[in-house]
Length: 275
Ligand code: A2P
Image 1 (cartoon, rainbow, N blue to C red):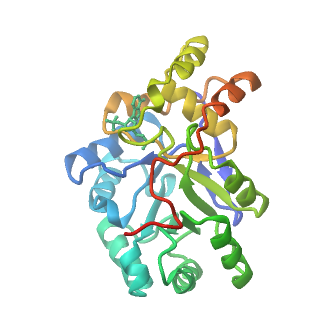
Image 2 (cartoon, rainbow, N blue to C red):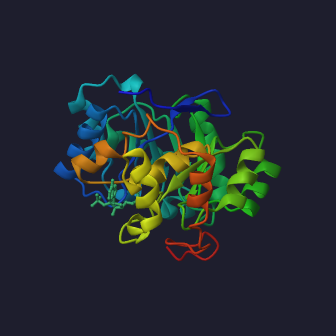
């Protein structure tokens, strides 16, 4: 198996560039199996959240895999209700309890819900105590990042945002990168129910490399320097989505994937979300 690529975050923490996303992966056997299959295939990065309702199964999958805890990068996130209720530290402890872990590698503010400024203080305390190896944000727009950076000495390690060939979100990525903040892409394959992977342009590119549309898209994210979190509940697809370290898209093919951009989101807008 080819060596997977990693990125060193702004605090020195090393993150594997491809992680398994488990949004909409049902709690119980489905999540346990997805995590186990992923770790067997070589993934060393799992991205969950309190609101996904599957932290317990993520922890179970980690333990069942037999892969040492220290070899796996685990992310979870502080949910909006807990942000609004100023429950940052308590909610974090609850997540650790469900995961059955005594630290996470990355803890994120899930959305810029009212109260996120105080939540950022809570995350800094969690980080200072060594319970999260890195802290960051998710669904922050440029103006949220600007407000945070103006008021905090600690830079978020990452901003996890929607990004796919259909909604590249490139200006925000460029801004974050210029600030030393790495970017993680959610719905990197266009999301559940999306039509990105049936785009014939991706199939045509993939045919040149003997790769599927999903593999082309994941490779595109890797080569643009983004951390990518594909989700699947199917073992074959989970394996396929990690078989992306043995080819390189040419500049021309990268440009062809860039041309798919429509500028339209598949998911909620961080400036108008209502949950
Ligand atoms: P499934 O979980 O049924 O495999 P995203 O990562 O952008 O959220 O997209 C995930 C969607 O793409 C899910 O609907 C997932 O379905 C599907 N998917 C994931 N990997 C692949 C793949 N390699 N080929 C086709 N569809 C995939």
